[in-house]
Image 1 (tube, helix red, strand yellow):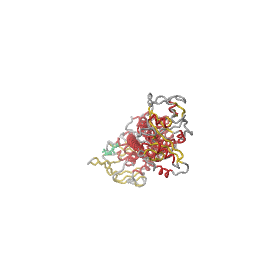
Image 2 (cartoon, chains in turn green, orange; image 1 turned 45 degrees about the vertical axis):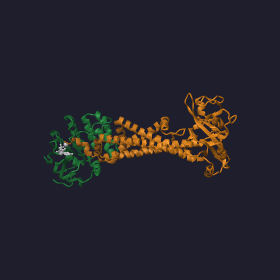
Image 3 (tube, each protein chain N blue to C red; image 1 turned 180 degrees about the vertical axis):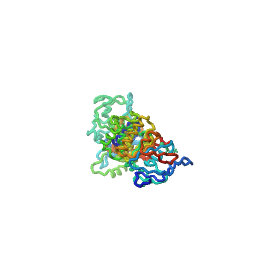
Image 4 (spheres, rainbow over the protein chains, first blue to last red; image 1 turned 90 degrees about the vertical axis):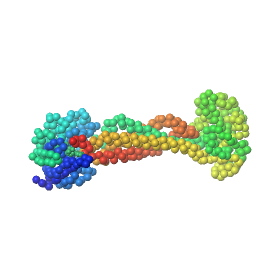
Length: 226
Length: 390
Ligand SMILES: Nc1ncnc2c1ncn2[C@@H]1O[C@H](COP(=O)(O)OP(=O)(O)O)[C@@H](O)[C@H]1O
Ligand SMILES: [Mg+2]
């Protein structure tokens, strides 16, 4: 099962949180390998460690111990400052509450990763992404003028506009009705199949999870795969 | 979109906060700019007043050079006097080309309470006043009840040559025989009459309070001053000394104003820092999310910095425009605070004052940004999503 050429290879990853005198073992010696093109659903009860795992993988949080190889490179000890560049290169993020910048239009929100990466000249790319998520007619609207589904599609466009190989989605449909949730998953499938984006998605919805290529189950900071 | 767009979006989001921040800076700048222009304008006005005095050195009664200096400029009460004997001794000194006696006193118009100064002089006093551009103040004789008046008096009381001088608090009737050209100095407010006439009016027969002296060309001022000081009970004051004297007199007031200004600046700074911290606190999650989207702390600082400088620079520009518009009011306020301020405009705008005010503002901007930008650096992307931890 262990393949050193995996896109992501986690070995004995643990994450502890300290709350007063108490230590929370959010992740306990997790082993996981992820290949290019995987579309993985992370399932488990609330508090089982899904977010913590995704945050560690996405470099938003650091693990307490263990080894994390990203494309063969050990990144578990990379400081936050350097992670910024790894994030730009490798990851896009989508969250349950969309975290759009309220003062910026749909188009401007989508432009942000390119601006920060110094690639804001790629106007075609922005337009194509807008068309792909079906929001080109809404591009000059503010987030407050959008429906929940439209907001999440904007967030997805923003997450993939800079062509990251990996998309991390933490309960992306948690705030949406089933119709919109289905639509988001269809969009994920397109991204996964058409652009070969590796998608790591935490979800509570078994029906949606079934559409993924792998399902990882989590409980009390440990995981196993079906 | 670019960083400027991001900064603008944030400024627009909190319109009122932005506006009040700008107004705060405007107030600081008005205070600062007024002080700077005042300090320079004061020097200039003082220098101009002394130039208009046209006197290289001044002989005054021994023991009161400070009071005398102000006296000669603005009137006031001085006990001691110089006698005609002392005057002749000064006039006969070989290095002196012109010596003109001066006797003056503040007088008040009975109806309007307008203050002015009655100056008793010799006709050749005009030679000490380059701005008048005249050889003589001509009077019919040494005791004539005649006077020359400054252009401002002529204008405000609508007086012209041939009119009688309206009843001031002295009883003597006086006919106006000339109106002086406009000089924009205190002279424009004064009345000049023959020395003997004024001696009579003020009750100082054969006396004067000061002697204006001009030296022959090529004479060394220091040496002549030394020699003239040998005359008993006479003290010699130079133009420079007089200038320093007046500067000294207002220094303490100016220090006080400066303390007030720095206090305002400090308060303003605390205000800006507080506002900045507030706007950053408001945006913690957003900034965390932007870091997740690949923003470096430097890039976010750049955006915050642009917001700061928009506020600072627009406040700065507005402050300078406002202090220019309200120049007169501010000047009157300063005149209340600084006694014996020279007449003429006290504020003095120059390229360097404008530039130094801008530089000062930019410096304040950097200073105010230190703590807020440290906060920006410490924001982690995790903060953006922490509300989802359960
Ligand atoms: N910042 C934190 N501080 C303390 N405990 C935390 C923190 N984040 C997560 N936890 C704890 O870690 C465990 C896993 O949380 P999480 O990964 O958010 O679970 P899930 O996303 O599956 O609901 C939970 O017990 C949670 O209380
Ligand atoms: Mg979670």
